[in-house]
Length: 396
Image (cartoon, rainbow, N blue to C red; front, side, top):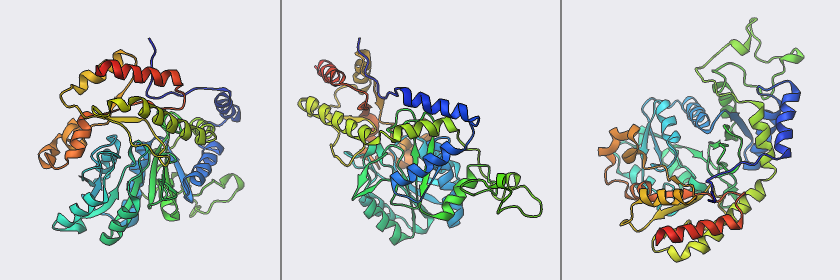
């Protein structure tokens, strides 16, 4: 039986050479490969700086921590974010002793809307309790950043972008991740730029850049782009202390390795092909599944979107979503749920169920009936035709 996977990563000669280059260098901890990819990724996104960390989750935690320090944000301050995304976004807010506040999403593009953000802020007694707006560009679909930034300015809030699933997506001529104080990326194995486990924080703010450098290394004093100690020079040498073991804030060990950065660089060379191929696959699947649009919400197609996957929402609620997905799997079409609505459907956040019950209907619906299949660059036309065939058989 044919198997069509949600994601794939094919190791070619270039990838093998990249790994061997690291091995032959004699250094596997952060070094030239990490610095090189940071520069390339900042240039690609359109920011001045990028700092690599060991995962997208670490990027979120470090970035929110930096925002707290920079803006002197108090504990339990509120962060407006999305109820529909991978749980790491909410977890990072909680880990930073802040409170996630959820507003409803657009049912088609899955992101929080400026209208819902504004309506929520207008409805609360004290908007000063809020500090951050954290939109997520889910499945590659950009949120309306111009309007979100305007609301943030009106209320004195900081905007951070979770662009982990939107490598290369465009919004009004800019790449997602370039329109806020900082943005967060994941290069997890199933994402458009793949490196296994790797993340990044992008920013054009020098102070943020230096803070992230410290936070990712247990809060040590060092924040130089490249260490110059080997040349006998260190701007942080004071009173005979070693800055590598002197810490002026509390941080984490979020450092990464050369291997992931080297692999990420090989994928970035192919980024235009990756984005285009995924767009072509989404378009082809849409055309093939159009006959079932009364039962399935097909993904909105746009050449501005760099698709993480092919998201679908079941319209026919008389069907069992669990049985439907299992039938797809049984016939070789791998799929995943669209994460579930965090405050009403994730057990770890069950304490919020009463607070959000019936308050975020679009998120509840998408969380229950949404799922996704692969549209990745390694799929062939035979794979896509097979997916269309299986959907037809299962829906019948």
